[in-house]
Image (tube, rainbow, N blue to C red):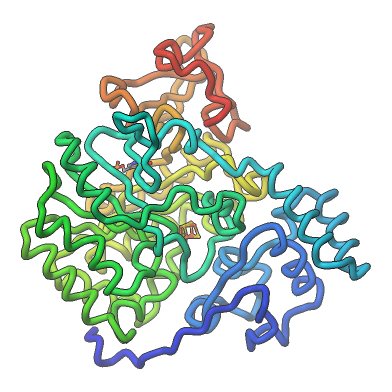
Length: 444
Ligand SMILES: *Cc1c(COP(=O)(O)O)cnc(C)c1O
Ligand code: SF4
């Protein structure tokens, strides 16, 4: 499909402030409407007119996965917290009191998962940390550009929610492209840079160029690949088609590739429906025409995509559009985790059922994977050894490269949703990597 067949759409953002201007909201039952108003005081809410017009099926919003992907749900809050806050709202308490109550609830919700604050931020020689740069795995540096720390819509399950509600004050972001170049020059082991956020492709092409061009002209260190972690394809594909600077973004992609770099658009797709509109299909085809790759990843989320059929359809659709299935993640233990989490054993079953139904072309996907403190841990199997049921695990990324691809075992646990809920198998006191100095997984 060429971009010429796609009609431009002018962007309209929806937040708590103008929520009543969403045309489809008029027909929404008042309980759902009220719940959104209460929960969005605690969890961030943002949508746009592509999501509301082209992705959500409004005939039954309560059963709709995309509705639940962007609109806060009552079940996301503990019952007591919800009731208390709803009562304060109904009583018309002053704004300051409502805000204070919401902040108290937010602070109870583990706003800093996986030890992000303490462990990933590199310390330079002076012992200061470099904001906006994370270097956890030897070959890859994550860069968080200041202007890319929001998204075109917010996923209700987002683990960066603390930034969006201001608990985190965007501490991670960096506004200085030269800081990235200097870091890469000092770290020749780094082969690829991953721009992330938020969503770096929400930035105008002019600002995006400010960050990317120095890499093309100065060629710091040994960087060969540039990646953008983004959900723009799913939330606003017009960014690559008809937006004012869409052509310039495409030109920048061309320039990255002409300069000899590999360009990977790490695309977050949560549901097969996000791949079905004309706009997203045209955008994918236009990106691929630059020579960039599109690699797709998403977490497995209760109520949204906890169904092998959705993943099968999503992976097959990605392959047919020329994109590459990459990761299925386990939902992180932050925010409303009880509402969204899927136990590891069930995640493994869902992954396996979907994986067994697709051809090898889609089996580039890996998962289910936990991004935990010591690394990315894959749930690799459910095994029985000597009559004992076990979960087989392995690192697909690790702080210590020696751990990668090494199998280890946990006692089978039907309910565990994260690494810290698992017990090492065979009566061991700790997992092998815990002996190496990371004594606690509690912050994972
Ligand atoms: C996932 C991840 C990466 C990238 O890992 P790949 O397996 O190379 O895609 C880099 N840094 C962090 C902190 C990550 O979680
Ligand atoms: S696109 Fe990513 S960063 Fe943005 S809200 Fe969704 S999960 Fe969070």
